[in-house]
Image (cartoon, rainbow, N blue to C red; front, side):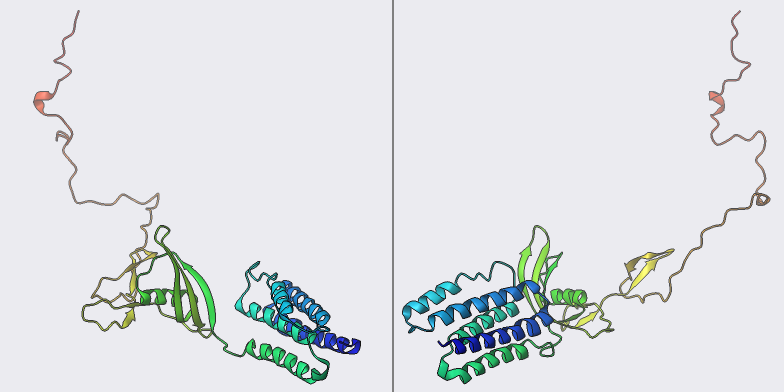
Length: 282
């Protein structure tokens, strides 16, 4: 490869990677450590491909190239599927720019532009907007799919499209799921529903039972009895006020007890011992 062609290939590679890494990836995902990984992998493969492009390619070169790519461990840290796609595009851009033949320069430029353009369109925020994916751990074991979907929709405030149960722990009473959902628009109120279990029902969802409050305490809602409407308001009992210090005692119509009347706790007559009946020793 001539020196001027090498410089043009290097300039094409650096411009394409700058656009892909900093103008597209970092502005959308904001992960700085992977920008260095993309640039390092790309420029390394470009150097290797440019060095070996002066000799005819054979089977040994292909085996050695795959061995070099196997050194890159994508499982060292947790990355998403979008970031894996950026990794492979960075690798391919380095190989295409490094192995570009002198008489096919237009094809090289076209391939690099197509690779960067596809990533720009495929990862655009406007495309497939409103679809999200979450890994959720619930503190309960669910055996009904409809009940599981209703619980997830109440927690995520959205419409569940797909849900995959990844793990069910009966000892810890937990369920780990992979949820694909579409969030509700801002300001949308969602009502929790339950599935009808009445015999002969069609399985349609009905609203949850109304709740009322205990008299005098609005902090503890209790379910309303079945078949009765929920009260419109909660009756509050006011606490009794203590009497004033100078207030007269309340009047009663009952007569006062007689002086010689026995008290309820007095013993019978045969068990009484008067003071005069006691013996005195000289």
